[in-house]
Image (cartoon, rainbow, N blue to C red):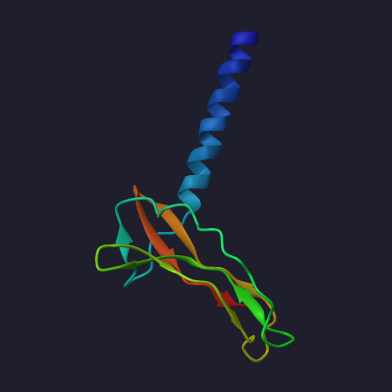
Length: 105
């Protein structure tokens, strides 16, 4: 009986993982596709905002001339009508990586 439950648990876990992986959307048209994982993010020292209301946009790894390049973080005023920055991120799909730009929300 324990063996059956264990097998069912593994099957359920595998099915859940397959569902989650299938939910990652494919790269949008024009996206840069990268064959390798981006390096770990760098630790940045976040200074004082230049003015009240400014939002910190963290640095990230960009892709230029066939390699990863660090794009430093910066302070930015929110775009009109928005208050929160949703950071960009690298997404993994079908054995490759692609960049999703950050945006104001």
